[in-house]
Image 1: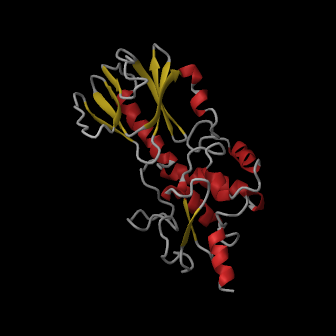
Image 2: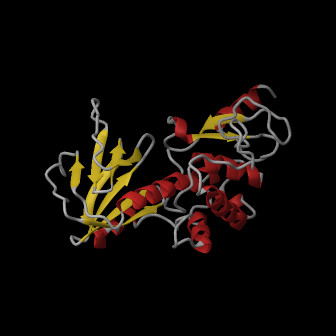
Image 3: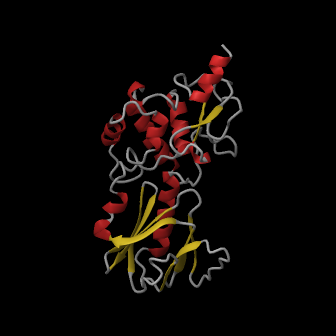
Length: 277
């Protein structure tokens, strides 16, 4: 699933093509929106809210909402671009006299009054890259469930919006805590939240995610996607296991260094440790 910085950059890309322009073509390829006519509407803004995209239209005061999930993406093209999509993966096409924006495999497509945006994104916590960022509020929300594993809590967009699996793994490593440590046992929760904010800010000008300071391929992260390899800091073998309610998805695997991140381990690892003791 795209991280918050990817969605923030996508919003900026769409804003450059659409904002201030009147739509000359609009194709919403979902059954409940297929007959909607947005031609003549002016795009006044494109905003990101966590991992959600909001395209605001006037004079109808409407907001077109999309979510990228795991495989969605937006691309922009010159004016007059013709969409060739034999697999029906295109969900949204918006065009003006200057360019065309195409939403491929975008999800949760909805059109609501702009005044009702809260029905789609009002549940989200403070946005790590948004003007509403509030570290104290993020900390307060995290503390509401002190028994929840910090790895799961950081992914819950109701606590803080924008952090995905890459940042979750890297934040836990850099703070030296196990992803399975209960929130209530994390000694410096403010430090965790501050690091999340700083990492997203540091990466908001790039589509990839660099937490090591080294932008070379294969050297951008400390533990994420490095299972079985030596820890860059101590040399121990990086571990990986599923975590959370949707742990069957690859996007919810947790990576960690057992030496640099002491603390609770997943049940499967604990069972293996007992069998060898």
